[in-house]
Amino acid sequence: MTTEIFHGVGKRKSAIARVWLKAGTGNITVNNRALEDYFPRETLRSLVFQPLRLTGTEGEFDIKVNVKGGGISGQADAVRYGIAKALIDCNIAFRPPLKKVGLCTRDARIVERKKYGRHKARRGLQWRKR
Image 1: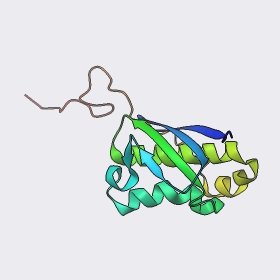
Image 2: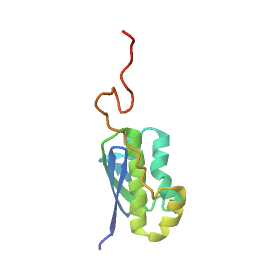
Image 3: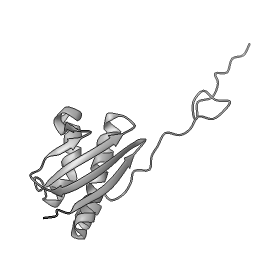
Image 4: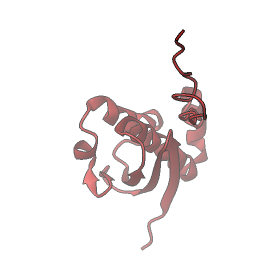
């Protein structure tokens, strides 16, 4: 008996999440920890569940996530995007509702690099008269 496993990669800022979906009971593990342990804030957990709620597949898949880089908020967004991509890989009919909400588009905003001759990316040196 073989169960099909679907894969998706989500990126946000400098966070990268690799997501694997397989048919199951709705278990979600992030870096070998329970979802509630890894994302203690309810708002972050609701972000992770958003693609599952939109497609009506909450509790149908066991989800294993490996996420690294960035902060906790960027990681939650990366997991959300990875789950959405894996769901589309699972069933192409899930694409229209996910696209309507904007979960099929990668958020390309990242930190701008620091330039020489400046304090930060855009902040210049403080001017003084003497």
